[in-house]
Image (tube, rainbow, N blue to C red):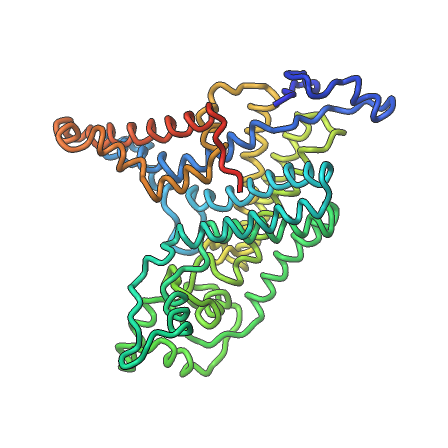
Length: 443
């Protein structure tokens, strides 16, 4: 990164720009230089990914070994809430979507300035398609039940396609990131930064209006509720039970009993994570786009040259606190639910994301304390590769090859801790290897 922050401005750490050229390009008006890359964003992305691919297992192993109460409290936060509410683990995914927006603002702004909007649009489309395809592969791809042609007939294109759709999860974590990035990026190119805020607000209010006012059939599609109905009626076909519920209700936000889940049941093809609906479903993608837009707005704010770095930190922290408080207040009427990405959830998760971005920005960029976060920077610079590696290879499985079996058994209760620490070291080792050799996956 050519520039490092100081409390009173920036100090130069490279030679790609000069303060003299900056002054000459803007006349006599004094402005703060803006770095080409914010190390804090890579560090925060890596911190976020660390909890997905290694930290949760390590905390669980330490808690079982020591029985420490404070580790138990931390472990309790490393599980998603069943439905309504918010735990630390519920922040991991939206924080990544938020950071995607921050990074998108940095990269797209640079591409537009150097190559134009058409080049930026091509990049957005290419990255969206590739990331969506990776999402399908990550969610199982074609690994579902094998295709069997109809009895007495030859396989047809239609039947093969139907089988593919029935056994493939089309919307998942990476797919949601792809769609949020793609739509947010195109909105930025078409509307510019000033109009992103009205769109952000409109998405939150519009989603609230749809969830509160659009009527649905008076039936819960959760597995528990359907099992009860099946016992009471003797009918096991979910579609038959659904169509038999002729009464309509509005303003329902329970599991399987809301507009988003009902829309997934009727219109989302393919395998769904929760059976009849998906936590990364169709309608809830709209507020996820709002989360990405919040990140883009935060990124645009960090790029402002007319404000001192510490001043930016203060604004991020204050805005984050206000969003968290506002989200919980909104949650009194529109519950905070990650699995349908409610508007109140966007505010709470986005508020915490702003606070974390402000903290990392102040420590890493303004105070230039970078040594402590280098492992996070390694991870954050190759987050997608390491995320896919956790699924395909598995750092825990590698650790079991190294210190599992008789070694772990000989260590007794501490064996799992050694496995967890080794898994984290494998993660850091791979991340550092890729970073040191400048091997980055760029879609």
